[in-house]
Amino acid sequence: MEEVKLDAVTLAHMALDAAGKAGATQAEAFAVRSVTKSVYVDDTRIKICEEKEDQGIAMRAMKGKRLAQVSSTAVFENDAVACAKVATLLADRSPSSRTYDRFPLPSQATLSPGPWDDRIESAEAANLIELVKATIGTVAERGVKVPRGVLRVATIESTILNTNGVDVSHRSTLMYANYDSMAEGTSPGEGVVSFNSPWLEDYAPESLGERLAQQALSARDAKALDGPVKGTVMIAPWELGQMLATSIMPAVSAESVYKKRSPWAGMEGKQVASEKLTIVDDPSDRRGLLSAAYDDEGVPTSVKRVVEKGVLKTYLYDSYNSSIDRKVPSGNGMRRRPQDAQYLFRSSLACAPVNMVVSPGRRPPEEIISSMDEGVVVDRFAFPTVSPYTGAFSLEVRSAHIVRNGSTAGHIKHALVTGNMFDGLKNIVEVGNDATIAGDTILPSIAFDGFEVVGSR
Image (cartoon, rainbow, N blue to C red; front, side, top):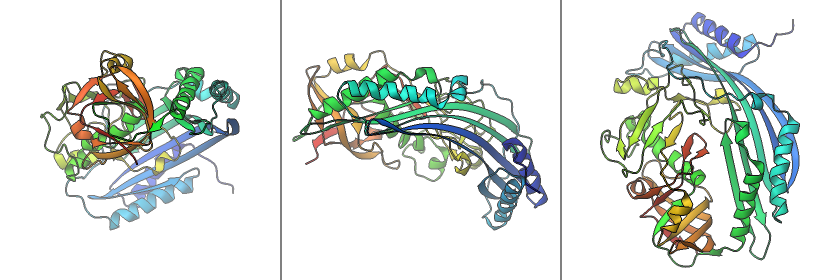
């Protein structure tokens, strides 16, 4: 007899039942289905358009205080049952937790459901192709090529069930784009532009194409930096977002604090940054790609002021780490990712922000630049990451410009910006007002003192 394909919710209920029969004292099922539509660009031409669908379960089982997790693609009943049985078997062999003895209990949400865009759900391949054509066409009109690119939209529908009575569902949409550009010449110039939003209407193909072309054209004229540049360093939102994601996000995670990996351990209520910096974890923000009424454990989310005028106000807790610190979970157990909807059931729970929002300043970047005596504005790093343990970084600049007396004095590439992110946060010159969605962070450009810019040769 041919097996019948089942929906994720039905499979989650089957998995919970199977875990109980296998001997689990408690069980939790995170079931998710996603549909992703992508258009890929190769050498300024659309190469392929594809649609992918996946469905699976992440199963957590407990025996007393012994906890194990197993994940699997799940389409048929046997998939769910097997996943539950293996998780329960592994719980027997797992070490016992000293503090964690139960999954979350049911609780009423106080925030509205996260963003869902019907236009993304109904978008056809032809709609996405037209958006990509408009983007790369704008770039090509400037005589610039697009070597690689992708435009992706996705819908995610998830359900969290546990044997304590949690039964919540969530659905969201996301849109992600990333394009490289190249302006040919004796010294070719490169550019890259990324885009994130839960809303299709936010994608402006011509504007994005103009930025992409301008980056490459500016970089073509750029020179490698020979000597050091002193002064202010302003970093663009997308690059800065990735730097904060590898520094501040781990620093405020209760897991990092518990494992003594956070530079901000023991700093709650103390000054950790400039008074110009305020950061809110805001799951109610409709711009947030992961905004939701519940986290991925089924715990209600809430708006939390994490850093207020430079003072660390709170850490973020999932259910496991809250048990260690004897706190109430803050709704920060996350599996979902801001740029990719596929195979989310494979992701382990992470204690992380839902939607980190850096409060904007009053002036646009252009006005801040006009006030700079000397400095560098970085548009693009090669790989903008920071040590989560120390905050140290040494990042290669791919596109930037020197500022002298409030005006651009030349474009540079192949320089290094070095410094410490946690020290830099104490030396903020000004925060811009150009709020930008960058993954699971919404933030503007920020100008810092104390970073060094040196030649890379």
